[in-house]
Length: 404
Image (cartoon, rainbow, N blue to C red; front, side):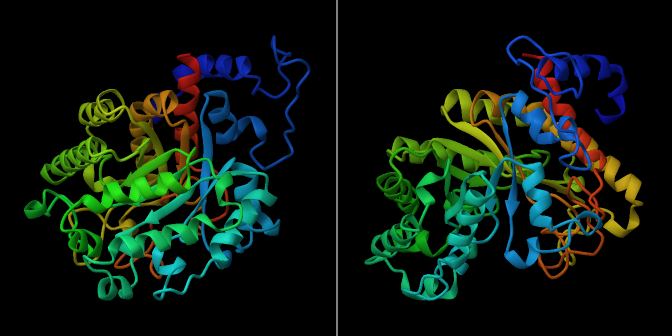
């Protein structure tokens, strides 16, 4: 827990030193005379999450949103938000560039500009990158619902995937999300499957296995992931069903021959849901031990969970002081990571946040629907200062080093 950090400081400092992460520490065997540059960012290299993650055998990354969003001024007028992300991460994931509504907004018209720009940015910044997401029915444009039917759905999916696979540089990605958010716990009549256009056209979940097989034919040596939401905080009947449906769908697809390599547990946390350590650990054990999948956390952030006119069973963001909000978020994030990171370290080895600073987040009016003002979901504040969440993430990573 966040409040218990002091008693572990000695062990964490020792772990940092053993990993060569303490500025000015004596050279450790195997590290030669390496010294880390403390001037690289306001934090200093040894205090960055990316450095702790690297020492723990995990790659830390951040979502890259549109050029308009990441062009916002950086800290104290020094560069831009994009520069700040580059300084503090080692892995990029696109926020919207590959989503179907942007990639093929009209049938047969492919807008590859954003996708290409994302890859060029990652390469220019010398970062690894992953792709999100080849099929995301929740963000399908209107034409999909009008044009896709039982006679042509394979052809439509083939073309979409093939054009995506032709974007210059895409085959340098480290892995891909093939599908995203296919299940919904209230869809009891379809065993949890969202009855989207592809499900209806295929007459069931066959389209999922087909999507993975098509992706494998195009990306023969890249790990293929199933991405999903609402499987982190398994604290009520809805989320118990959600996890059950997701596991059953994964098992069915694997039995049908879908080449699924891993599961991207998004990591969008909410105050309103609380936390159940045992259920999360059981879920991750099912994924890794029983289904043989890798696990990554691909979209970590933490908010209240209040949605106007829909989820009002929690306090509004504006009812918290900044200090209370940030402390509560840090505590929840650390509890979540303390359970999940050991599974990530042993399998998928990637941890990404859905943005880096509150000055640009995906849970604010104008970006997300029906979201109230004053959410503070990320690890740096509006002035690019590290928040308690930053230290919570770093603490969880350092404890992985301690346990090695």
